[in-house]
Image (cartoon, rainbow, N blue to C red; front, side, top):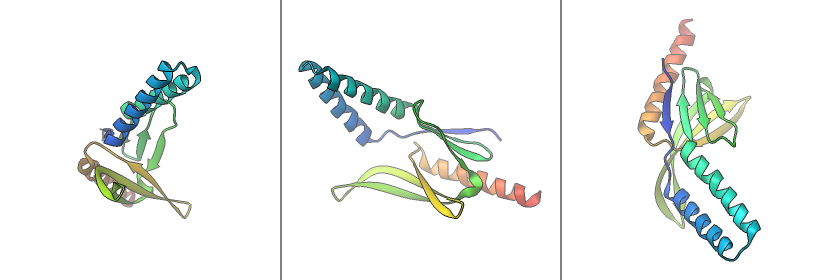
Length: 142
């Protein structure tokens, strides 16, 4: 079976953070604060890199989360996934429309989790479920 790639959804919070960083970096340039200007530029580069390059790749055996070139990939074996929950974010008591999926895994008796935000979460869950079922039937038949 071929690898399936899902791109990350860019939430309004990311755009708001980018706008704030742009404003503060512009203000630092206006006031001629080279240190704050450099820090702001570096933070904007890292944020844009994460916004653009985050993808979730489903292969036959693993779910790989490529976040950016500055961080290591997160590799989750499909047989260790125990459940997937849909979560939403809250801001001052209001529920934001940003939908995220929490992938729970078991590793050495401990439960760990990873938050993923694909553009099409329903397709992502369906594809993940099909690959897990196929993997489980393959291991039981072998």
